[in-house]
Length: 382
Ligand code: CAA
Image 1: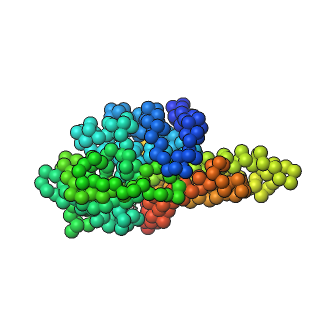
Image 2 (image 1 turned 60 degrees about the vertical axis):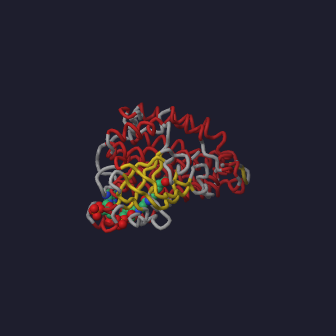
Image 3 (image 1 turned 180 degrees about the vertical axis):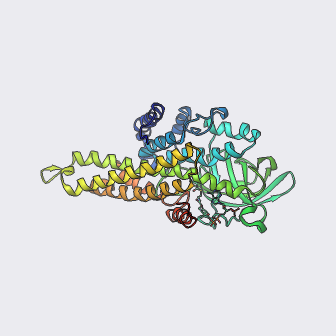
């Protein structure tokens, strides 16, 4: 077993760290407060190759491995996890499906601009009544011969307004249940699409979350990915990789909060010494470090399995559930260590704590991950 990162992986990690610590940090508090989308940063990160980091250079991506993806998303999310989720959704939930299952024309027309980061993508699975129960899709895509006619509402869509390309899931044949769901690539500017107001969220406030309504939207038949009825399987396959991205984001939120807590504990004095010298604080930092390291190994293991072409769905569910729950605990402790200072915005940790909460909810709640893991136990896969 080799725990050594390659030179290339270390370089990518360093590039992400440099960008986060030099650039993202400057305006992260203002972007959080005013819920401003990080347009300029996304453009810069696209130039550095992060928007299509998992896509092959053949389709204008950077062709990096999934281990590098974990390292980069961790570093970016230490400072700004909204940037982390934008990059994760683009790579894992949108580019992945088009690259793996799309036609040459779809790759040429849609994947290349997404991989370059000239455009971003959004993944439209959730609905007002279909979140955890993703098969309960109400949005319909009626087969009209040369096109589908789409009607319905999608909810909680990351990149909902800024994305140019939607990967939409909709029900074509209700009698077939989840086997009647299709995945369609939709131009966000198609006639009949209207975007709901920006969601005023607790955390990840500079990521762009909206509902999207479809009214008689025509989607050409050639925009379907895979065979008729392949949509639900595509969504599940994509989420296996997406969960590695969100686990890495949660890892970054936790390790960012831990680094701030260590720095503060070495500076802040009480009862005549730095608070890190009080065992109450030292043991907290020690527990936090161990939890973060355990989570990091789960994230890297899932990424490594994916890079080896081995099954990674169970590993990604474990990584996401453990890391998201850990991030909530670690950020709460980071605020506690900061005392009153932790409760105000200038010290960053309150934001990280608010951001951590969402990692337990989206791309499958912690409870959904436990369903995936426990079913694998029942099936004898673990
Ligand atoms: N890969 C491929 N196929 C899979 C699969 C996987 N990992 N998991 C399930 N499937 C297939 C099954 O084989 C089955 O197909 P067949 O009947 O043809 O064999 C089909 O999918 C249905 O599977 P289940 O019977 O297991 O379905 P279920 O209703 O019991 O639900 C679930 C399974 C795991 C709970 C699933 O519904 C789920 O993951 N829910 C959570 C949804 C989710 O993560 N939403 C996130 C929204 S996206 C988001 O948050 C993005 C963002 O913007 C940040």
